[in-house]
Length: 193
Image 1: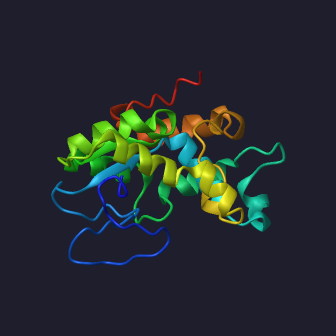
Image 2: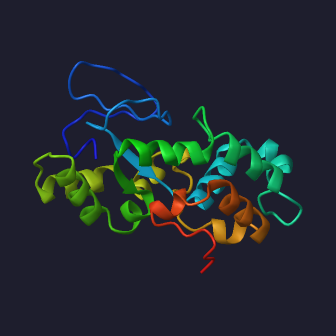
Image 3: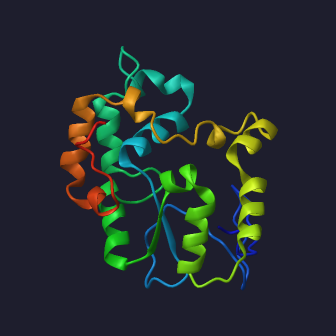
């Protein structure tokens, strides 16, 4: 999105300038809705991503003996959204309450050109599909993974590892803790298909 709109964006480093600045954050402490894009991800996959982000030496507290995410770890992530200062439910509700422009991570993964074209228009930018296509090719995770094999952030970029890493108990915990919020973004956690 940043590249398509002509913003300079360097991952893992924040450089604030007066114009053309993009800030990537897990914070929801913003007022208004201008110039904000909320990238939402299936909460089930958010749990898996949080587990992958930890060092392999912590695997005994993250995964159970069957290799699935431990309910106690899931409970912690649900109550303390990684990188944020609130729970997962509060994080989702902050977006809903603020009416930010939303893009689903899974939609970007499945159809980046159509999804980003729609979001760029929605945010009021005038950008050609060729510029968007070029940005997608330049910043494609698969290409970046080949160039930066040690970058753990690029390790998965998954949309469905939750199917093998989350038990029915953990999905039920998520469903209970988050209530209706995920459905507002099109995530039906009780549906395991």
